[in-house]
Image: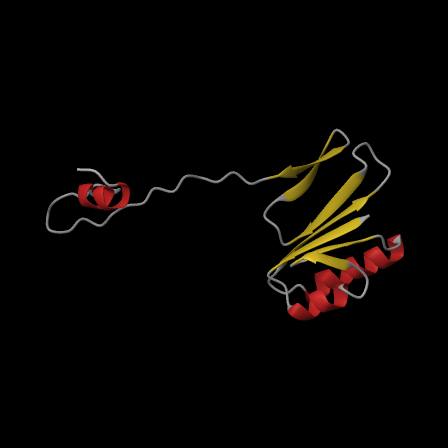
Length: 122
């Protein structure tokens, strides 16, 4: 079993993959091609993905029973004692600074009037 997931890729690449795999949802392709065909399809995805992202997952003979590869993802597969895990980058908190106008300080967040409009009440 092979699954390829495309995000923000050209329509021509999606059309190419439908020759070999079934598109079960927009950008999600499923099938059981041979290893050789799967590797050729993945090479074409690398070649024509452009600014898009791609994920390949397929069945294999290991502890998990499957493996996966990514293309232009911020999440990367990482081997941990023989088990492949996804390494998600930590998101650093961003502090938004509001410009001070009129000599006074502004507090970040919703005003009292905006809260009343959004949530009701007095």
